[in-house]
Amino acid sequence: MSRIDLNLVWTIINVIILYLLLKKFLIKPVTAIMDKREQMVKQGLESARAQESQAKELKVKYEEALASAKEESLQLVEKARENAQVEYDRILGEADEQAKKIKEAAKKDVELDREKAMKEMQSEVAGLALTAVSRILQEGTDPQSDGALYEQFLKKAGEANDTDR
Image (cartoon, rainbow, N blue to C red; front, side, top):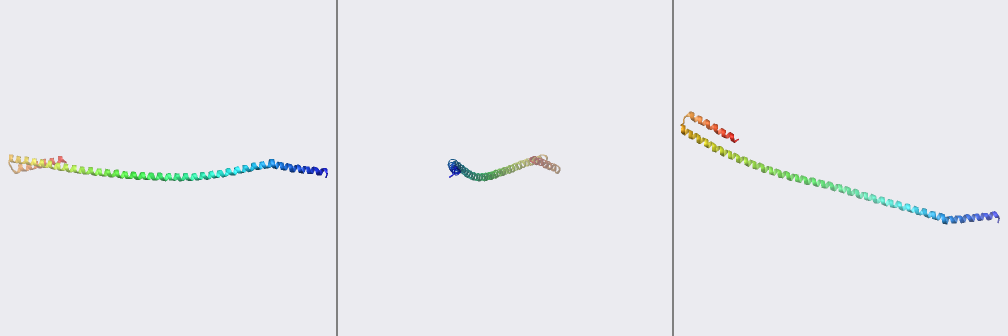
């Protein structure tokens, strides 16, 4: 073999040894690191997707809870409105009943006052009649004095009637 061939063989052997050494000490560790990093990125993406999914589920739950709370508050407001209407109707009914009682009492008072006034007027008319009779007996009777007494009687009876109103 010649010297060139031997150098070529040594060069090829050196290149093969260098390739094997590089492969064992450089390419394998770098590939392993790259595989680990790829695995970490995949795990990070999967974790992010899982967290995103959980966040979406929580968002849906919170939206449902919010809708439920809104519905419950609307129901509470409606119930309070109904209770207020019932209370309003009750108070209005009581006031109406009290007004009726007051009106009835006022009617009774007016009727009693009317009856009292009628009795007083009857008593006054009777007194006037007695006065007229006693004057007639004292003064005697003639048509002129009878007419004057009658006019005087009507005038006093009218005045007595006017003062009661």
